[in-house]
Length: 312
Ligand code: NAP
Image (cartoon, rainbow, N blue to C red; front, top):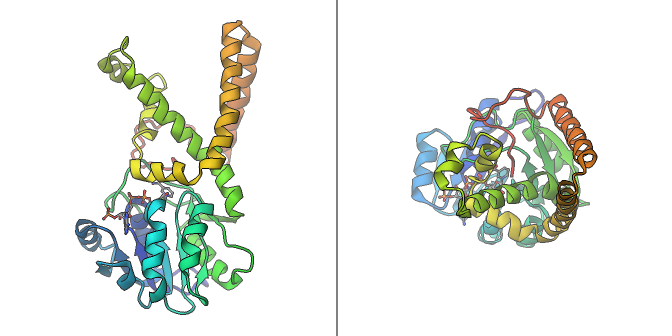
Protein backbone atom coordinates (compact mmCIF):
# COMPACT_ATOMS: atom_id res chain seq x y z
CA UNK A 1 0.00 0.00 0.00
CA UNK A 2 1.24 3.50 -0.81
CA UNK A 3 2.25 5.60 2.20
CA UNK A 4 -0.69 7.33 3.83
CA UNK A 5 -3.19 6.12 1.23
CA UNK A 6 -5.93 3.82 2.46
CA UNK A 7 -6.72 1.39 -0.35
CA UNK A 8 -10.16 1.23 -1.87
CA UNK A 9 -12.25 -1.69 -0.63
CA UNK A 10 -13.69 -2.56 -3.99
CA UNK A 11 -12.61 -1.16 -7.35
CA UNK A 12 -15.00 -1.78 -10.23
CA UNK A 13 -13.50 -1.54 -13.70
CA UNK A 14 -16.06 -1.22 -16.47
CA UNK A 15 -14.05 -2.25 -19.54
CA UNK A 16 -10.77 -4.16 -19.31
CA UNK A 17 -8.88 -3.21 -22.46
CA UNK A 18 -5.44 -1.59 -22.61
CA UNK A 19 -6.24 1.09 -20.02
CA UNK A 20 -8.50 -0.97 -17.73
CA UNK A 21 -5.99 -3.83 -17.58
CA UNK A 22 -3.07 -1.44 -16.98
CA UNK A 23 -5.06 0.08 -14.11
CA UNK A 24 -5.66 -3.42 -12.69
CA UNK A 25 -1.92 -4.22 -12.91
CA UNK A 26 -0.87 -0.90 -11.36
CA UNK A 27 -3.53 -1.15 -8.63
CA UNK A 28 -2.31 -4.66 -7.77
CA UNK A 29 1.33 -3.51 -7.81
CA UNK A 30 0.58 -0.83 -5.23
CA UNK A 31 -1.97 -2.81 -3.19
CA UNK A 32 -4.46 -0.01 -3.83
CA UNK A 33 -7.70 -2.02 -3.75
CA UNK A 34 -8.72 -5.10 -1.77
CA UNK A 35 -11.00 -6.42 -4.50
CA UNK A 36 -11.14 -5.71 -8.23
CA UNK A 37 -14.50 -6.38 -9.90
CA UNK A 38 -14.53 -6.33 -13.69
CA UNK A 39 -17.21 -6.01 -16.32
CA UNK A 40 -16.41 -6.22 -20.04
CA UNK A 41 -18.75 -6.58 -22.96
CA UNK A 42 -17.55 -10.02 -24.06
CA UNK A 43 -17.26 -13.23 -22.06
CA UNK A 44 -13.84 -13.73 -23.69
CA UNK A 45 -12.44 -10.53 -22.15
CA UNK A 46 -13.95 -11.37 -18.77
CA UNK A 47 -12.30 -14.81 -18.88
CA UNK A 48 -8.97 -13.27 -19.89
CA UNK A 49 -9.22 -10.85 -16.96
CA UNK A 50 -9.63 -13.77 -14.57
CA UNK A 51 -6.87 -15.82 -16.19
CA UNK A 52 -4.39 -12.93 -15.99
CA UNK A 53 -5.30 -12.23 -12.37
CA UNK A 54 -6.60 -8.76 -13.24
CA UNK A 55 -9.98 -9.44 -11.60
CA UNK A 56 -11.08 -10.99 -8.32
CA UNK A 57 -14.58 -11.26 -9.75
CA UNK A 58 -16.06 -10.78 -13.22
CA UNK A 59 -19.62 -9.74 -14.00
CA UNK A 60 -21.82 -10.01 -17.05
CA UNK A 61 -23.35 -6.57 -16.42
CA UNK A 62 -22.04 -3.22 -15.24
CA UNK A 63 -24.93 -3.09 -12.74
CA UNK A 64 -23.59 -6.19 -10.97
CA UNK A 65 -19.95 -5.12 -11.11
CA UNK A 66 -20.56 -1.82 -9.30
CA UNK A 67 -22.47 -3.34 -6.36
CA UNK A 68 -20.72 -2.27 -3.16
CA UNK A 69 -17.81 -0.62 -5.01
CA UNK A 70 -16.27 2.52 -3.50
CA UNK A 71 -14.39 3.38 -6.72
CA UNK A 72 -15.86 2.78 -10.18
CA UNK A 73 -13.78 3.58 -13.25
CA UNK A 74 -15.34 3.51 -16.72
CA UNK A 75 -12.66 2.23 -19.13
CA UNK A 76 -14.79 1.70 -22.26
CA UNK A 77 -14.58 3.67 -25.51
CA UNK A 78 -16.20 7.05 -24.85
CA UNK A 79 -19.14 6.29 -27.14
CA UNK A 80 -20.27 3.64 -24.62
CA UNK A 81 -20.11 5.87 -21.52
CA UNK A 82 -23.73 7.09 -21.59
CA UNK A 83 -25.18 3.57 -21.80
CA UNK A 84 -22.82 2.28 -19.10
CA UNK A 85 -23.69 5.17 -16.76
CA UNK A 86 -27.39 4.68 -17.34
CA UNK A 87 -27.13 0.97 -16.61
CA UNK A 88 -25.10 1.30 -13.42
CA UNK A 89 -26.52 4.59 -12.05
CA UNK A 90 -29.18 3.20 -9.74
CA UNK A 91 -26.86 0.45 -8.45
CA UNK A 92 -24.14 2.75 -7.09
CA UNK A 93 -23.49 2.83 -3.35
CA UNK A 94 -23.93 6.15 -1.53
CA UNK A 95 -20.56 7.88 -1.17
CA UNK A 96 -19.02 5.96 -4.08
CA UNK A 97 -16.62 7.73 -6.43
CA UNK A 98 -17.15 7.38 -10.17
CA UNK A 99 -14.29 8.17 -12.53
CA UNK A 100 -13.32 7.34 -16.11
CA UNK A 101 -10.31 7.38 -18.42
CA UNK A 102 -11.84 8.80 -21.61
CA UNK A 103 -9.68 10.81 -23.99
CA UNK A 104 -12.35 13.54 -24.27
CA UNK A 105 -13.76 15.09 -21.11
CA UNK A 106 -16.65 17.49 -21.85
CA UNK A 107 -18.64 14.78 -23.65
CA UNK A 108 -18.06 12.29 -20.83
CA UNK A 109 -19.32 14.80 -18.27
CA UNK A 110 -22.36 15.44 -20.51
CA UNK A 111 -23.05 11.70 -20.96
CA UNK A 112 -22.33 10.33 -17.48
CA UNK A 113 -23.28 12.97 -14.92
CA UNK A 114 -27.07 12.95 -15.51
CA UNK A 115 -27.18 9.26 -14.58
CA UNK A 116 -25.37 9.56 -11.22
CA UNK A 117 -27.54 9.78 -8.10
CA UNK A 118 -27.02 12.42 -5.41
CA UNK A 119 -24.33 11.41 -2.92
CA UNK A 120 -22.15 9.80 -5.61
CA UNK A 121 -18.99 11.78 -6.42
CA UNK A 122 -17.87 12.22 -10.01
CA UNK A 123 -14.17 12.83 -10.71
CA UNK A 124 -13.55 12.37 -14.46
CA UNK A 125 -9.98 11.56 -15.49
CA UNK A 126 -7.70 10.98 -18.46
CA UNK A 127 -4.33 9.23 -18.15
CA UNK A 128 -2.17 10.73 -20.89
CA UNK A 129 -0.43 7.44 -21.59
CA UNK A 130 -1.12 4.61 -23.94
CA UNK A 131 -0.03 2.50 -26.86
CA UNK A 132 -1.56 1.45 -30.16
CA UNK A 133 -2.52 -1.94 -28.65
CA UNK A 134 -5.97 -2.87 -27.33
CA UNK A 135 -7.56 -5.53 -25.19
CA UNK A 136 -6.97 -7.07 -21.74
CA UNK A 137 -3.64 -8.66 -22.70
CA UNK A 138 -2.15 -5.32 -23.77
CA UNK A 139 -1.91 -3.72 -20.32
CA UNK A 140 1.17 -3.45 -18.09
CA UNK A 141 1.79 -2.13 -14.60
CA UNK A 142 4.16 0.71 -15.43
CA UNK A 143 2.16 2.29 -18.26
CA UNK A 144 1.38 5.31 -16.06
CA UNK A 145 4.80 5.74 -14.43
CA UNK A 146 5.87 9.37 -14.75
CA UNK A 147 2.94 10.10 -17.11
CA UNK A 148 0.32 12.77 -16.55
CA UNK A 149 -3.22 12.03 -15.49
CA UNK A 150 -5.60 14.96 -15.95
CA UNK A 151 -8.63 15.13 -13.63
CA UNK A 152 -11.58 17.36 -14.52
CA UNK A 153 -13.95 17.52 -11.51
CA UNK A 154 -16.62 20.18 -11.83
CA UNK A 155 -16.65 23.07 -9.37
CA UNK A 156 -18.39 21.96 -6.18
CA UNK A 157 -17.13 18.36 -6.34
CA UNK A 158 -16.25 16.98 -2.91
CA UNK A 159 -12.52 17.73 -2.50
CA UNK A 160 -12.01 14.58 -0.42
CA UNK A 161 -13.17 12.52 -3.43
CA UNK A 162 -10.81 14.36 -5.79
CA UNK A 163 -7.98 13.91 -3.27
CA UNK A 164 -8.57 10.15 -3.07
CA UNK A 165 -8.55 9.79 -6.85
CA UNK A 166 -5.39 11.94 -6.99
CA UNK A 167 -3.70 9.74 -4.36
CA UNK A 168 -4.70 6.60 -6.26
CA UNK A 169 -3.24 7.85 -9.56
CA UNK A 170 -0.12 9.07 -7.79
CA UNK A 171 0.31 5.65 -6.17
CA UNK A 172 -0.02 4.12 -9.67
CA UNK A 173 3.00 6.20 -10.71
CA UNK A 174 1.26 9.10 -12.45
CA UNK A 175 1.52 12.85 -11.96
CA UNK A 176 -1.84 14.52 -11.57
CA UNK A 177 -3.10 17.86 -12.87
CA UNK A 178 -6.61 19.28 -12.47
CA UNK A 179 -8.21 21.26 -15.29
CA UNK A 180 -11.55 22.33 -16.80
CA UNK A 181 -13.03 19.71 -19.17
CA UNK A 182 -13.21 22.14 -22.13
CA UNK A 183 -9.61 23.22 -21.64
CA UNK A 184 -8.50 19.58 -21.49
CA UNK A 185 -10.27 18.94 -24.80
CA UNK A 186 -8.55 21.89 -26.49
CA UNK A 187 -5.08 20.92 -25.23
CA UNK A 188 -5.52 17.28 -26.22
CA UNK A 189 -6.91 18.25 -29.63
CA UNK A 190 -3.51 19.65 -30.63
CA UNK A 191 -1.23 17.31 -28.66
CA UNK A 192 -3.00 14.04 -29.43
CA UNK A 193 -6.15 14.11 -31.54
CA UNK A 194 -4.94 16.12 -34.56
CA UNK A 195 -1.60 14.20 -34.66
CA UNK A 196 -3.55 10.94 -34.79
CA UNK A 197 -5.75 12.34 -37.57
CA UNK A 198 -2.65 13.35 -39.53
CA UNK A 199 -1.22 9.86 -39.09
CA UNK A 200 -4.46 8.22 -40.24
CA UNK A 201 -4.56 10.59 -43.21
CA UNK A 202 -0.97 10.19 -44.39
CA UNK A 203 -1.09 6.41 -44.13
CA UNK A 204 -4.44 6.45 -45.97
CA UNK A 205 -3.02 8.70 -48.71
CA UNK A 206 0.07 6.52 -49.14
CA UNK A 207 -2.01 3.38 -49.41
CA UNK A 208 -4.21 5.00 -52.07
CA UNK A 209 -1.32 6.16 -54.28
CA UNK A 210 -1.21 4.40 -57.61
CA UNK A 211 2.20 5.65 -58.75
CA UNK A 212 3.92 4.16 -55.69
CA UNK A 213 3.22 0.52 -55.06
CA UNK A 214 2.15 -0.75 -51.65
CA UNK A 215 5.29 -2.89 -51.43
CA UNK A 216 7.48 0.20 -51.97
CA UNK A 217 5.66 2.02 -49.17
CA UNK A 218 6.41 -0.86 -46.82
CA UNK A 219 9.98 -1.40 -48.08
CA UNK A 220 11.09 2.23 -47.76
CA UNK A 221 9.03 3.12 -44.69
CA UNK A 222 11.97 4.07 -42.45
CA UNK A 223 12.03 7.63 -43.78
CA UNK A 224 9.44 8.97 -41.32
CA UNK A 225 6.43 7.02 -42.54
CA UNK A 226 6.99 4.11 -40.15
CA UNK A 227 6.26 6.17 -37.03
CA UNK A 228 3.01 7.37 -38.59
CA UNK A 229 1.95 3.77 -39.31
CA UNK A 230 2.35 2.89 -35.63
CA UNK A 231 0.05 5.71 -34.58
CA UNK A 232 -2.36 4.91 -37.43
CA UNK A 233 -2.63 1.34 -36.09
CA UNK A 234 -4.48 2.67 -33.03
CA UNK A 235 -7.90 1.30 -32.14
CA UNK A 236 -10.53 2.33 -34.75
CA UNK A 237 -13.48 2.36 -32.31
CA UNK A 238 -11.68 4.44 -29.71
CA UNK A 239 -10.49 7.00 -32.25
CA UNK A 240 -13.79 7.23 -34.10
CA UNK A 241 -15.37 8.11 -30.75
CA UNK A 242 -12.66 10.69 -29.95
CA UNK A 243 -13.33 12.61 -33.18
CA UNK A 244 -17.12 12.36 -32.86
CA UNK A 245 -16.94 13.70 -29.29
CA UNK A 246 -14.26 16.39 -29.57
CA UNK A 247 -15.54 17.83 -32.81
CA UNK A 248 -15.30 21.55 -32.09
CA UNK A 249 -11.80 21.59 -30.59
CA UNK A 250 -10.44 19.31 -33.32
CA UNK A 251 -11.97 21.44 -36.08
CA UNK A 252 -10.55 24.59 -34.50
CA UNK A 253 -7.05 23.10 -34.28
CA UNK A 254 -7.32 21.61 -37.77
CA UNK A 255 -8.11 25.08 -39.10
CA UNK A 256 -4.90 26.44 -37.58
CA UNK A 257 -2.95 23.42 -38.81
CA UNK A 258 -4.25 23.79 -42.36
CA UNK A 259 -3.31 27.49 -42.50
CA UNK A 260 0.20 26.70 -41.31
CA UNK A 261 0.52 23.84 -43.79
CA UNK A 262 -0.48 26.14 -46.66
CA UNK A 263 2.20 28.61 -45.50
CA UNK A 264 4.78 25.81 -45.66
CA UNK A 265 3.54 24.79 -49.09
CA UNK A 266 4.03 28.39 -50.20
CA UNK A 267 7.54 28.52 -48.72
CA UNK A 268 8.48 25.38 -50.64
CA UNK A 269 6.91 26.69 -53.86
CA UNK A 270 8.83 30.01 -53.63
CA UNK A 271 12.09 28.48 -52.44
CA UNK A 272 11.87 30.32 -49.10
CA UNK A 273 14.51 28.32 -47.23
CA UNK A 274 14.63 30.75 -44.29
CA UNK A 275 11.00 30.07 -43.37
CA UNK A 276 11.58 26.32 -43.52
CA UNK A 277 14.84 26.50 -41.57
CA UNK A 278 13.36 28.75 -38.85
CA UNK A 279 10.39 26.46 -38.30
CA UNK A 280 12.50 23.29 -38.23
CA UNK A 281 14.80 24.94 -35.67
CA UNK A 282 11.87 25.88 -33.42
CA UNK A 283 10.34 22.40 -33.63
CA UNK A 284 13.64 20.79 -32.73
CA UNK A 285 13.62 22.84 -29.50
CA UNK A 286 10.14 21.51 -28.66
CA UNK A 287 11.39 17.94 -29.01
CA UNK A 288 14.29 18.79 -26.68
CA UNK A 289 11.84 20.28 -24.17
CA UNK A 290 9.77 17.05 -24.16
CA UNK A 291 12.90 14.96 -23.54
CA UNK A 292 14.07 17.34 -20.80
CA UNK A 293 10.64 17.01 -19.13
CA UNK A 294 11.14 13.22 -19.00
CA UNK A 295 8.21 12.52 -21.34
CA UNK A 296 10.37 10.87 -24.03
CA UNK A 297 13.78 9.27 -24.39
CA UNK A 298 16.37 10.77 -26.75
CA UNK A 299 17.33 7.43 -28.33
CA UNK A 300 15.36 6.29 -31.34
CA UNK A 301 13.00 3.52 -30.26
CA UNK A 302 11.03 2.81 -33.38
CA UNK A 303 10.05 -0.68 -32.30
CA UNK A 304 8.77 0.59 -28.93
CA UNK A 305 9.16 -2.75 -27.20
CA UNK A 306 7.70 -1.21 -24.08
CA UNK A 307 5.71 1.56 -25.60
CA UNK A 308 4.76 4.71 -23.80
CA UNK A 309 3.22 7.93 -24.65
CA UNK A 310 1.11 7.81 -27.80
CA UNK A 311 -1.78 8.60 -25.62
CA UNK A 312 -5.36 8.87 -26.56
P1 NAP B 1 -9.78 -1.18 -25.49
O1 NAP B 1 -8.45 -1.81 -25.28
O2 NAP B 1 -10.42 -1.30 -26.84
O3 NAP B 1 -10.81 -1.75 -24.39
C1 NAP B 1 -12.12 -1.32 -24.29
C2 NAP B 1 -12.83 -2.15 -23.23
O4 NAP B 1 -14.17 -1.67 -23.10
C3 NAP B 1 -12.95 -3.63 -23.56
O5 NAP B 1 -12.79 -4.40 -22.40
C4 NAP B 1 -14.38 -3.75 -24.07
O6 NAP B 1 -14.95 -5.02 -23.84
C5 NAP B 1 -15.07 -2.75 -23.19
N1 NAP B 1 -16.34 -2.25 -23.76
C6 NAP B 1 -16.55 -1.71 -24.98
N2 NAP B 1 -17.83 -1.35 -25.11
C7 NAP B 1 -18.43 -1.68 -23.94
C8 NAP B 1 -19.76 -1.59 -23.46
N3 NAP B 1 -20.73 -1.04 -24.21
N4 NAP B 1 -20.02 -2.04 -22.22
C9 NAP B 1 -19.05 -2.57 -21.46
N5 NAP B 1 -17.77 -2.70 -21.86
C10 NAP B 1 -17.48 -2.27 -23.08
O7 NAP B 1 -9.74 0.39 -25.17
P2 NAP B 1 -8.64 1.24 -24.34
O8 NAP B 1 -7.50 1.55 -25.25
O9 NAP B 1 -8.41 0.59 -23.05
O10 NAP B 1 -9.45 2.60 -24.18
C11 NAP B 1 -10.46 2.71 -23.19
C12 NAP B 1 -10.69 4.19 -22.91
O11 NAP B 1 -9.45 4.78 -22.51
C13 NAP B 1 -11.21 5.00 -24.08
O12 NAP B 1 -12.22 5.86 -23.64
C14 NAP B 1 -10.01 5.83 -24.52
O13 NAP B 1 -10.43 7.11 -24.99
C15 NAP B 1 -9.23 5.97 -23.23
N6 NAP B 1 -7.77 6.09 -23.38
C16 NAP B 1 -7.11 5.29 -24.26
C17 NAP B 1 -5.73 5.41 -24.40
C18 NAP B 1 -4.98 4.57 -25.38
O14 NAP B 1 -3.85 4.90 -25.76
N7 NAP B 1 -5.53 3.46 -25.84
C19 NAP B 1 -5.03 6.34 -23.61
C20 NAP B 1 -5.73 7.10 -22.67
C21 NAP B 1 -7.10 6.98 -22.57
P3 NAP B 1 -14.60 -6.25 -24.82
O15 NAP B 1 -13.13 -6.53 -24.61
O16 NAP B 1 -15.43 -7.34 -24.33
O17 NAP B 1 -14.91 -5.79 -26.21
